[in-house]
Image (cartoon, rainbow, N blue to C red; front, side):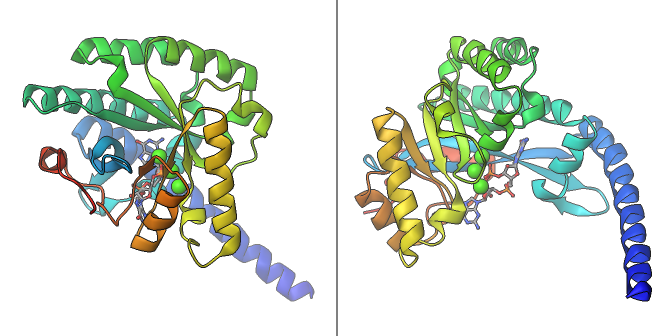
Length: 278
Ligand code: C2E
Ligand code: CA
Ligand code: CA
Ligand code: CA
């Protein structure tokens, strides 16, 4: 037992060193990436289940690293959060998304909402002014911006978060609760958050229609959200069966590979005004 414990400890110790080295690498690489324009956004359509058309897009961050190639957000958002760089990263995203929205407007396409993802660490007193400034800089009406926030972030400093949320909503920006059902937030907060929609997490959508528990959870989320006058978006929809179930259950919007993967900004105008399903 002693040996394996020592071995286990030695391995664990080494693992931490690797982790620290990786973290340091990423920290300086993220700083460089912000300056060198290595980040870019892709956009994934959200389809209105009733009109069958694109109603909004979610901006998803991509990192094209000169040596490591394309790094998905799961590979660096965590480090950015831990090292305090996430605010700079997400400010970059906010600016880039507003700039892109303006570009679409210039092209004369009918506008749609653009959603960006925010982390817990973005919810500081400075956020409302930051958002207001970005909207003004790019002359984007607040109604076209949506913020997706995961429920796990909302548990610390709830009162403070609610106050910041209210200021943001006061600007005319809408809020969506992301990955709903996966965090620990109490349902009692749901009615206090000034949100307009819930996103059912992909982990529940995946089990539809075979897993009866996932089906029950999805149905319950939709019913509860509607009672609270919230819109429901299902993420990670990949199959026709999932679409059928969600449509039947009264879900409002669908996002997932069934309709479109995240795509380059230039592809979005081609996806407007086209029915996504029969
Ligand atoms: P999320 O907000 O839950 O975003 C949805 C993720 O699911 C995206 O992964 C998207 O590409 C993927 N996805 C969409 N439809 C499907 C589907 O049908 N099947 C499957 N298997 N996957 C699907 P991505 O782009 O890798 O982003 C992962 C996470 O990284 C996001 O999860 C979000 O939490 C975070 N993230 C992305 N961009 C940003 C950002 O700008 N700022 C912050 N703070 N976080 C971000
Ligand atoms: Ca999201
Ligand atoms: Ca999500
Ligand atoms: Ca998710």
